[in-house]
Structure formats: structure tokens, C-alpha cells
Length: 232
Ligand SMILES: Nc1ncnc2c1ncn2[C@@H]1O[C@H](COP(=O)(O)OP(=O)(O)OP(=O)(O)O)[C@@H](O)[C@H]1O
Ligand SMILES: [Mg+2]
Image 1 (cartoon, rainbow, N blue to C red):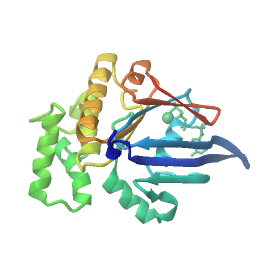
Image 2: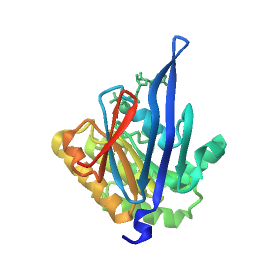
Image 3: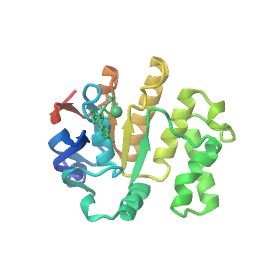
């Protein structure tokens, strides 16, 4: 396999996370160690409360581990200030959540312009890219709609476009199909899978749905704070 296909994108080294519970440390992640290759699709499973969102937030630089190191594209996150981490997230990472998290006062198109504005992308180019991404998720012509005027599946498709529009190397998705009916969930999943494969984007996705596991290259399973790695 050519070396570029096996480049390590995300490295987790003995990552532990404790939450404080009535003054006592409550361990959620225990010494999690793993490497994720660029372009790989990882599905993260585990029962409710096992630490999936905690791990995703740590990989995405939204939260910090209690111990251990996360390295993204060779950059150890412990070496970054809060501002540095925010810049890395804006440039390198896209997020998709269960409840879509679109800005309700902005149209679909304006929601897509937001990440590009933050990066200082030229307005005309940003608009073109937003139109292209709306088309890519099957919503050409719906750019003027506000989130509340869109169905759940349509909102999540806008959210996928928003997560990818700035061409992040890494997308973090926390139960992206958890709030959709089965058929819509499958459409959104297929779209997310296709778009990430097309762009060569690394995708780490938490889910409770057994059918989502089928798209994975590898499955990460959290059990009592420990990570087990398998293939689907
Ligand atoms: N900010 C916090 N403060 C204290 N405890 C927390 C905090 N966030 C999460 N926890 C605890 O950490 C554990 C893991 O939570 P997490 O949200 O990561 O689980 P999850 O696997 O994503 O669950 P679900 O499938 O329900 O989304 C739970 O016991 C939770 O109560
Ligand atoms: Mg969760």
C-alpha cells in the first residue's frame, strides 16, 4: 500500500478522562490508545454512558483528557492554547451532532457561509461553495429556507454540508442519525459515507444503530472505559 494511504491522522496515546463525582474521580476513559489512518471511517459503539461523546469531544479538541495525548496530523493537542485549539477546530475539523445544531436565525445558505466567514474566505467564492454543497446534499434551491422550515433529514443534510464545506481533514459525528426515522437515517448515513470517501476525509462516528456499523473500516467499542478495536 502506498505510504500516503497509511498515514496516521489521529493518534491517541494512553488517553484517560476522569469526571469529578461528589469530589471523587469517576473514570470514564482508561488509557485509550489507538491510531486512525487518514481517510479511515471509524464507528464508535458502546452502551449509553460508556464515554462515546466524551471520546469524540476529546478527539475533536472540544474537551481535554485528564491524562494522555491526542495528536492530529502530527500536532499534539496538549501543546495548543484554547485559542490554538479553536483555530485547529475551525480549519481542520467538521462536527455533526444528533440534533443538527443549525443556527435557527440563519437560512440554510447562511449556515453554510458561517464556517467560511470564520476562515476569511472571499464572499463570492464562499457563496459559490455554499450553493455547490447544497446541491451535493440534494438541497439545491433550498438555501433560503430557515432550519424550522426544513424536515429533520433536510436539516441534517445541511449540517453535513456545513461540516464539510471548509474541507476539514477530520469529521466527528455524534449519533448523526439518532434523531431520524430509519429510511432518512439510511439516506443521511449513505450521504455522509459517500461525501467523506469522496473527499478523503477521516470520519469518526458514534452510533447506537447496528446498521451504521456496516459502513465502518474499523469499529471502536468502549467497555468500562477500555477501547476494543475490531472490524465489522
Ligand atoms: N461534563 C460532565 N461532568 C461529569 N460527568 C460527565 C460529564 N459528561 C459526561 N459525564 C459522564 O461520563 C460518562 C460518559 O458520558 P458520555 O456522554 O460520553 O456517554 P455516551 O457513551 O456518549 O452516552 P450516550 O450513548 O447516552 O450518548 C457518563 O457517566 C456521564 O454521566
Ligand atoms: Mg453520547
